[in-house]
Length: 299
Image (cartoon, rainbow, N blue to C red; front, top):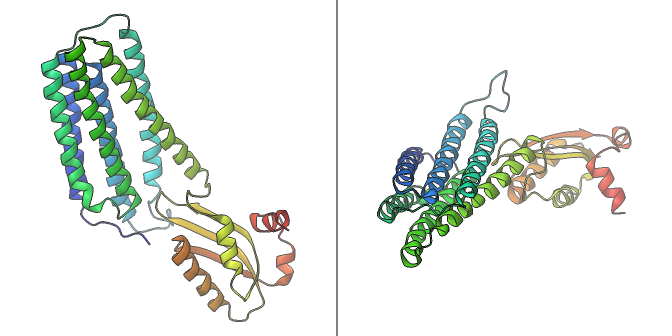
């Protein structure tokens, strides 16, 4: 089971930092005429959304289940991530289109403003990373937020490097190239995020879960004759659920279920299971599922 960090104030602090960076970078982009800074502002704004999603997900995840939401509110993270991914894709495309439109004319870039606002963004992103560094490995949610900020540090450094290249060469095309690069990076990651969200909504098998290994581990228990109707899906990006039908001759079904639960928790980090125990008559009638098809395909 994942250990959930208790201190959400760090996330709030990182949100405030990145919101300030977004506003500052956008103003700097307008003042200097740098599209790279404007795209950097958009990139940091995506972090505000991502951090906000993580924060809301953590807070809502703590709410207990009720009659209308038997799993609680853990899937609020998924819905928010869907909106976030679509918004990021739109922002990235808009910046790329603007860069293409500007390509015909080498619009001058104010280097002083570019250096100043780029440095402010870099410092702010480093401060945000330091806030979340301690909790980065405690949950997948915190790790994702930390990586978002880490990529922003690289992005901010690229903006500053753009200023140096323009200063040395006098070529303003590099600003458009960097802005397209930053936006392309945003677009790629946003599409990946969207694919992961859709996979989760479609109740696909979570990344890192090996259905063959799970089935093999269940069948390794001596009292288990067969397993069918085996399903694993994610409630959110951190918590997975397993359900299956179990064929056994054992009278002590509680012991069999406890053995399976222990294996799932220890080897697959699955703590929520629903196991239906069946006798031979029911087992013979269940052939349209992953377990039986898998056994047939592999002899």
